[in-house]
Length: 330
Image (cartoon, rainbow, N blue to C red; front, side, top):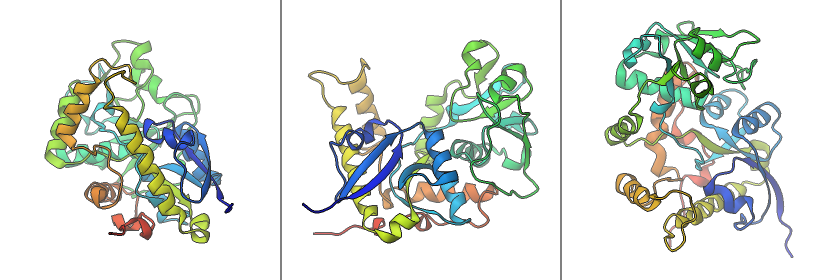
């Protein structure tokens, strides 16, 4: 029997990756060791210590790494996507009613390089005139003190970044009114534990996000999948092997949404939601691949550069293994 390459992969528990995690789908030539880890842990361990052969990765941090020592190369797989208008939270006593009211305010963000806030700042700048340099940013742990940037960043002087204190958390600071707003990926726990102190900037975020998609055709990408460059250079075939396996795992997950004899998910009107989603996005509403996502990636890389996170604007082609930029035809 031919020997298979042992490869470790760290990724979160998504429906679209579950067939990889349970071994139902196996990448060609690879004996995959799948570790299900929270995204913050995966990013930290991969960026700081490069513990895994491949891993889910923050699109922003990966883009930062490309202009440093470039330790990874990505494949055009996007396990996490999310509209982020819903992720702007404000203190209810801040007087902030519109996006323009954020100008000149104190805004928390766990890490300036974090992908969700990059998208939020870009949306606010492109669509509401709130320049990323027009506010004061306060960075640190949302729920636990002493969170640092996973990769060191050096920003132009026009951006105003402050570290919060060693015992402080952004969630508590927002509820107390020490910061006016929060750009983040997770809902702050104080929104529930201290009701009435925090609300979303866009209460009708679904309608706002639908309008944003109708205008831009952008479904924001949060994470990609990277391979350690030394692994890729020794075994360049793993890029397409992993891409094909991720694609097949996603296809199997998608099929489950159309099962109506005995529904697999605890959502009473799942069928209606799926039909609505297809009407908006088309049949492949969570597209992998380069060509299908180039325009979205190009916007992200532009705002990443405008926000001082990349010294030059990267091109979408710079991100991925060249084997994954095209496919064979029969």
